[in-house]
Image 1 (cartoon, rainbow, N blue to C red):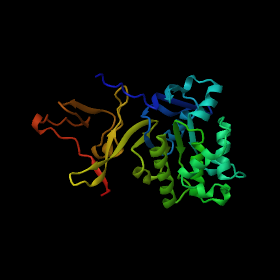
Image 2 (image 1 turned 90 degrees about the vertical axis):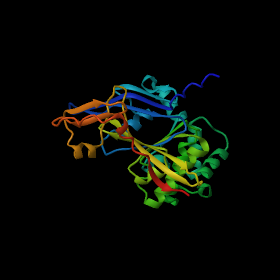
Image 3 (image 1 turned 60 degrees about the vertical axis):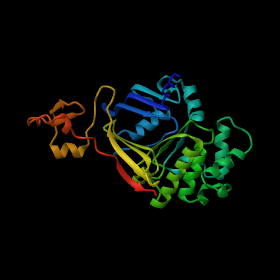
Image 4 (image 1 turned 135 degrees about the vertical axis):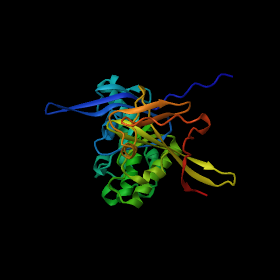
Length: 316
């Protein structure tokens, strides 16, 4: 029997560059970024201010265009879309949740009316039954008749998620959706993203500074200086006694031309800068500061093993 072909990523960015010109000065927000997100994944995007997170999200939502590189979402080649196709893409393919509620909801409409309006804009002019279903999915169906001012911040963001899902998008994008919320409410909103991902299979990419996001996503991608630098993968492991443990392992990201960003703490601790020495071993690459000789090669039997994945939490 032939093996099934590999699935096409839902989000595929390759060599993505975005340059802004301000007062005749060029600023590179993205510097050859690569990113793959598979269909149905729930991924967090983290990084310091100015690292390129929001620029990437603007490109993926077709609100901006890259200077160079490739960006494909749900089979759409974003740089190649016409103006009309970009509008259709934003209506039909992606849903978006902003940090500020005022950008997500119309204040003079109720929760169900906000969702129903989004469906109507997308061409779905039927009854409000689907709007009520989405509000029930995100846990605010009992507040369907209330306007945003009558809802708490967390309830407003959950209604915003329902609005973003109004036209059954393939991809859900969120820019700091918990940025204006307290810790407890943030957890409720992140759990809503989890439920949407689990129930609908919607691919979701969340830009956030919220450290609690790690408990709710399958993968965390860190951006540094306009490129993806590290990824943390998470999964649940069941031991021999049936206890479930949340596991995590961090990886450096190697781009298509072989570049890799070492974590800043590694650079500082080993005083790595400018030139470094490399040596290829049978199962790894050694890296040493350029001003000192490389360590002698270790016998194959003594080769260091990869560090074991870390245990995040006991779910048993």
